[in-house]
Image (cartoon, rainbow, N blue to C red; front, top):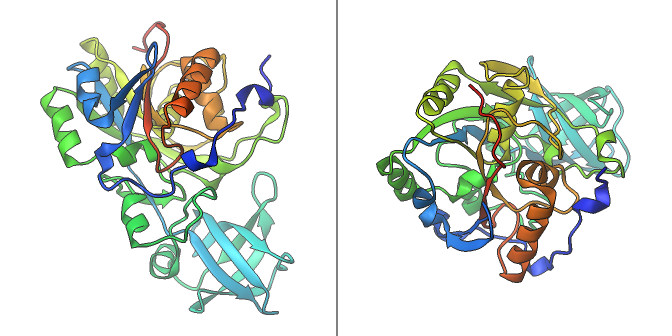
Length: 346
């Protein structure tokens, strides 16, 4: 039985990418389908076959981070996790002392939000009521929710580059980072190669950065995320399977959406919340190949890719990536993985 320590590795801090490259498709690509091969993202079309299907996540990152003060004057920092009906939100909140239910927070020196109480899966979130549409207020006054390992304040460049070209449905508080490598020329090259595409939605939650604090990984509790796999995506998968095409998930978010919709044994249209936790031993039903960035030590995403491609193989690939000086995490380079042959979903 694998434990948390089995998903650790030492990463030189200078390999954590702090800024995106000038061109999206200029990233390196580690071809990890077998023995690691160093490539470039622009080579991706040649690594796939006509008839393969790429599945993209069309979530849009919202400006979910807000700064403000309590009535006492103490500083607060919010990360809006989910927008609810009635101008309400769930949010993570950092303050020297927790605010009480019934109190108000002055946010961005622009509006007041009422504290309704605490809750969430582990009582770690605050329920707040905004005075108007939260999406509009966040867009006007919020900040791009860059992950904690990116150490600079968000900028106009981040507002553009921490977003995929097809981001359409607002709701994520972290980017589906494998999507950040695609620009218009690369998408056109994929189309010319005869590679189809479809979209699903998974609104990435702040729980994607939640550390695993249990030594037995099966004891870890995932935060839920909203997702939708529509009938058009299911039909695209079925069409690809009918011609022996492979399903290529662009990012762990697309993979989680597809596998959540296939947990009943076959892929079906589905929407709702998922807390799917993919660890070694998971029975994949929908995805054949995965394009993904490099993930944090001891993270649930490192466990996911280990489940997909094999624990020992992933460790070999990460050792190679560190030795070859790949750029890691959200603004870093990419890796292409293939799961061992298994009966296809039909």
